[in-house]
Image 1 (cartoon, rainbow, N blue to C red):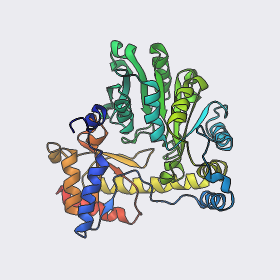
Image 2: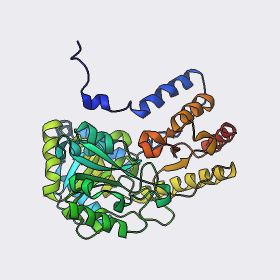
Image 3: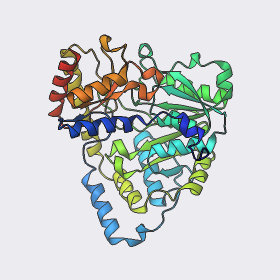
Length: 394
């Protein structure tokens, strides 16, 4: 029976952080604690009505959509994506060859790693980051080279600190702005121009995770990597419906870019899955083609929640600044909690108060000393959350 164990790749991964948090949450519910869950970036607002209506009509009245879908995405979906990219970013894509439907961008990123990386290949991964950026590399047999995101640099990577010998060997470079978990945004577009130049110089595929492009405020508008010269030669961009249209449970997104760069992912997926169900693709197309005022209104709600939490945290002595994107606050632990660490802080906070946050260490070693707060509960609950934090940090 010694052979019947998980692969080295699986064993090398840490336990999934949210599984551990969920186990403690279950204990809190069992103890009848009033749980306020600000851990996962799991939108609490509903999917827009016109998207739901399209899904219901399609499932009920168009039985052919119950059959196997096209792995790369149906033409209607890919056309809707290319039109949306043109309208939103003034980026031109060929819907036939430059768009692939994904079962959520998380799946797409992981499968892209498998499509591109051979054992031992190096990927440049920001630290802290969305966990699939490093987990996907490990599962593909690649090696992660961590690129620190430091507070003194506004959580933007310093390309000059990447060693020449590492850059020459690297095959992929992951960037994610607006950033999960740090909520950082790219305000100086010259950084993206430098990143494109860097990747061209070293022949590295730039993976631009743009899942939060529409969750912005304070006058900030997020760009596409393809708005910058030369990006299409060296980059792929990933988008998700989870945050833009509150469709996290629907599992749909897309990858886009030059056909030659996208082809390995499309080929890999054709062997591994049947793609996104057709009725979901049609509903997603309706989201992209329909009114976008719901997206703007949602961003205003997140902005209001962010401002309320920032103001409240500063009042209780927990210094933080306003953000310009995402649904997160990335908070440095108070000094007296730095020694015990973010996981201990999050576990104790949950067990003692019922308030759930995510320990920063779950996003990488450089995330230690921070917690991530997701603004995903009704507005009137933030007052209770602040009261619990105030009592706890005393």
